[in-house]
Length: 200
Image (cartoon, rainbow, N blue to C red; front, side, top):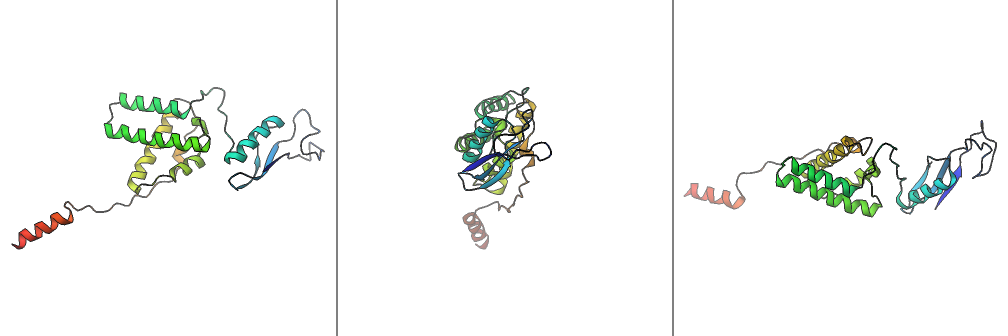
């Protein structure tokens, strides 16, 4: 349960009330503290001085552990589903290999499912923490994971180019160390037959 309160600035406000402020023209900032539904303790600003908006943001914070970031006025808000359609169509126009396009479709399918669980709909809600959580769901080898991360970065770079987001948080994802294992040109059975033929 989160508690919403004004964090009064003593130099500008003498109020001790958790909601009202003596400075009516520019009220003190509003914060929230308490435990989210996931059991995480938070104490952070709600980035608004309007009490009604603060309560809405506190409910989002309590339910999801994050506050949805509103897009700037000059940025078109695009859903993840819309981004998927644009990216796939663009990759097909570039005549990329079927296998490459299939990888993009796969990561979008997983991202859409993950976003639904997190209560996320818009591309501008995909911050660094959310992308890190999404990456943690990938149950693949290091090389495949590295390729997948590159595709994710490419997807959000496309959104940035279209000015649907103001920055690409995927570029801040840590580099994945790839463990390359030596691949023998033949299977064990094939090698056995080769040795047997040489022995004969």
